[in-house]
Length: 278
Image 1 (cartoon, helix red, strand yellow):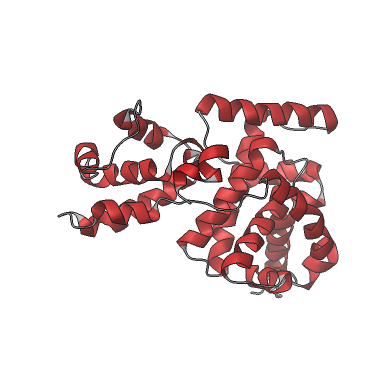
Image 2 (cartoon, helix red, strand yellow):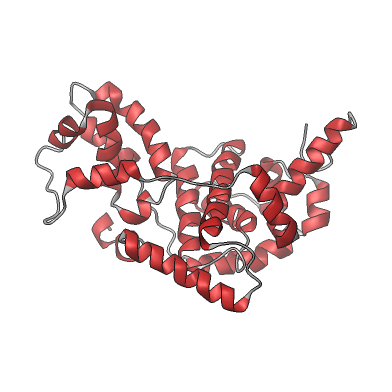
């Protein structure tokens, strides 16, 4: 299978307008069924906060860059047609990490949660086995059971291979980490993200010339796309905003807030936290 024939190309690449409208339709549908307590814009920022948390958490369990950003891409896909009232992001985050671990480095849920730092009190408060059983099918359905993700990391190396600036490919990879936190992978093919990242290191003209005989699809203005990719922003809620939001959303949303609060309270009492190892 190539990228062009993949489910990613067929189902998970949108125009900016189409992506916005899909998300807005999901938000409006949720507003008719749930007690919605935040604006559409804040809903997106709330999801982005937990996308950031996913990346942080994946480092605790030693996921490599491919594993981390595969899990991130899956979580971003979940919230195209779903909202936080249907699938709480903290649980979607754990589910996406668990799904990636199944295919790359099989783990039990208990081992995964232990690696993430959850302790006995977490099990008592949230009953993760029951919660995850409930959430995982919702996540898989939102993904249409399509879990293959094409990432741009290999393309950066391939474009730089044999070029005078080959040693710069790692700087471009670092830029990709920033780009992938935005909606870029839902809007453009991975190869174009690779060129955009490289352009920030060696310049746009050199990056495009480095493609050599690689054909750019007809009708694609690569220079414009590079500029559009680099202009994408990643806006998320602050911890203070998250705390305020989760006070009204309920326990399923507050996983990380509860852990952080108990850690701070425990520190005040000079005792070890009961939920996260010191």
